[in-house]
Length: 94
Image 1 (tube, helix red, strand yellow):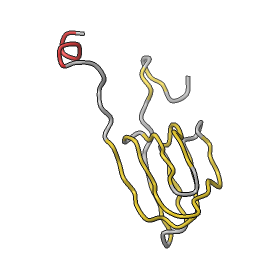
Image 2 (image 1 turned 90 degrees about the horizontal axis):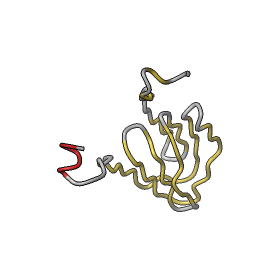
Image 3 (image 1 turned 90 degrees about the vertical axis):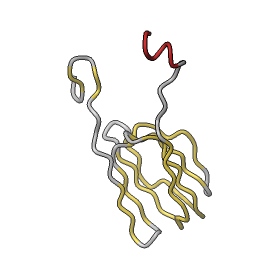
Image 4 (image 1 turned 45 degrees about the horizontal axis):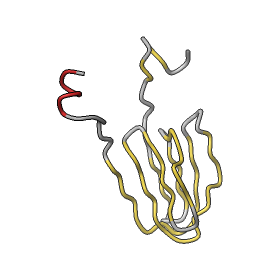
């Protein structure tokens, strides 16, 4: 299947282009966890990304290709690292 090798999904490149804090184009987007006009929360191949601002609007989304375009006034970008679930013992011996 396209984008998979030996049962493991290949990570897509994650890029973020911003123009004048008003337009953004992102790649490597795998899911949109939530959005409204003040915050957009995305899952990317580099972790969870929260975009905070004003009058935020998603212009284009193609999760199969991993592309998202948005406009509005961007005030803050924040990444959360992915965490591996389970206890230390289950990760070591699981």
